[in-house]
Image (cartoon, rainbow, N blue to C red; front, side, top):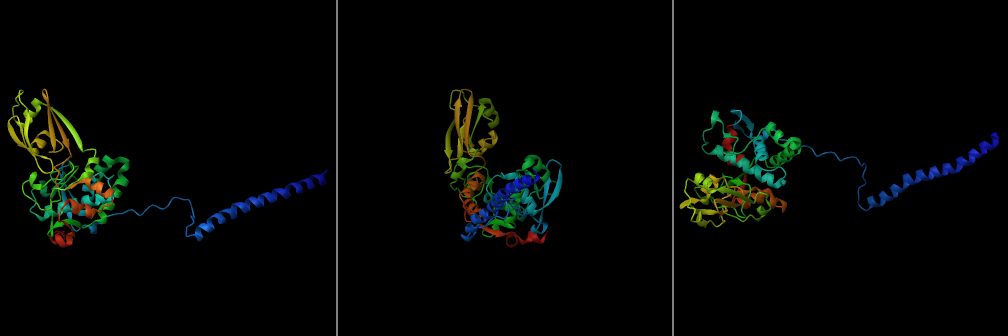
Length: 349
């Protein structure tokens, strides 16, 4: 019985070993047969299916900033001294959505950097506690790291890394006109065109000319409607509206279709006055009267002068670089370095 059992075992092991050897051959040889022709054809075999290493994180160093900016913090009433490029990073983070294209963020970085250089080169206005600027729209919106973390929550890391990349790639660069820093006006969304500076502000600036900006029609802020009671409009504009007559009349428009002047309640106002007193999104508006209400429909969001942020993002999506974007919205402008344009700022640091 023992002999028979042993013979049986040997007979069983033989085929099993052959099957096992065949499987091993298949496992080892077949992938080689598949990969070898691929490599010979110019391909690259993957050594591992492990996750690729993450790209090296971009950072800004203190020496990247030729000077520091003293920012008056509205909430704490204290002055925060911040290296220039860190200041620019936080302004871009506060002024433009991080979801925007990298080239649009680069363009915004130059606008922010140019603003502070221009502001410090001219006679700066007086700010509390000797600060260079405030953290509000009076100058440029600026939020600290803590504030941005609170706003962005779990998105903080990737958003800040993306914005830092845009700032680092353009460090030291500003927008100039005839070798002087420009007034880099920007706003959210146009009505399809930007505005000549003198039509909204006093004074004509040669680089702030009206240009077509069709990309803005894709902005979620392109159209808006606000409804006011007649009494609310009367109170805001300091007028009396005759219920038996048309509330709004004699509307004149600029070439960019914004309201230059309008008569409401028998009084004449500029489009800017109406926009600001009624807190409208734009000075391109239509007025519709319904019983004791006035309906204001606006196109665009902001004053309309300079660079449209949604327009810049639209251009970036089409493959335009930040320099092309800036030179489109700021006519005749150049890109220069702070060291060349405002060396006095670096020497005072």
